[in-house]
Length: 187
Image 1 (tube, helix red, strand yellow):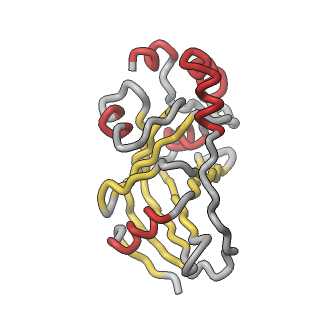
Image 2 (cartoon, one colour):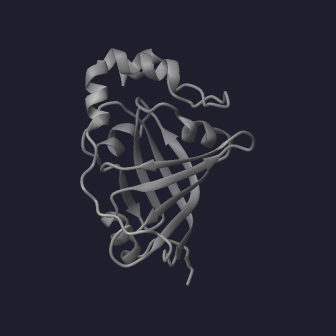
């Protein structure tokens, strides 16, 4: 049932592209484990052994904080329609923030996202599939538009203030590496 690969195959890459959402898991050495659902058009396969995903402003920034302590990341994709399948992608990840050298090139791979806060580059060291027999069937309706609406209402300065207040440390008090407002304004 479960099968392991050293990198993504064309078939697995196609599976990823067909999914409307994925899950991200990270953990620092101490503190809470974080698992977050991600949607929108926010993930790109760069090569068989590297993916990047775009992260918008949210209520926390746990992933960035965890990666500063321990770079482990797992992405999980589930087939909620069609043939059952679960795909887990394991590796070491790092955050890229606005103003850093890679930001412009990587963020250009995605449609504009108001409040884009960081990108995460995952270097894959293991890929695993499993059956997905226990995953229920769901019908996709549409992506939510609330993030853009919320970010639009806040405006650039409001988003920067929100990020400075709520996204510079994790719920466990770990720093996230998010630049100070001045650096983000210059980006």
